[in-house]
Length: 192
Image (cartoon, rainbow, N blue to C red; front, side, top):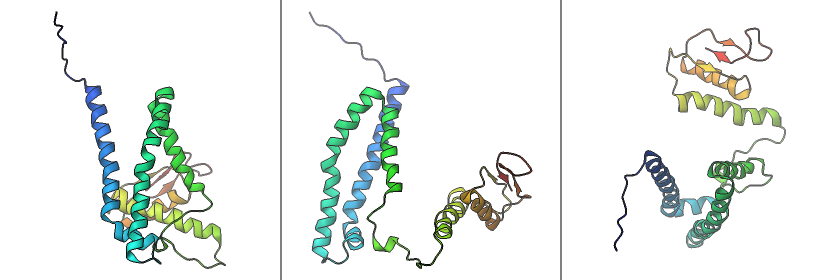
């Protein structure tokens, strides 16, 4: 006796999951594609003292390490995702990657470094290196603030204050009132 199975159309949730998975895979493979295509350039940055052939081999070995480690990551984090949920596992992987911010040692190409004087005050160098570039960059490159635009900034840390500076540089209008802990206009942010 033959049995027939009813075929139902995909739900919106299933379509969304397939789309998100495909997008993630596309990004991942695009990263691998870039490393493969830019092997000579990446090798020149990270393995500069070596001859060109050795640089390319070392770069491709680092590239291959990504493929070698992928199955282990899938096994560990896939199982963890099944146990505690995909959302929390994703947050854990972001946390693991984010802890590299606090690393004592790191490997970067020489071109990515900026030498500073030994007597430069560390707190001001950090402020300029992070606050100014991030705050002004957020206004000019990310938000693309135009002359006459109104800007609201929440927070008065180094980055927030440099967002105000970037907004002024971009020609944003407004009185530029400050608001936050200890400011007379109360909690909230900075408007300009």
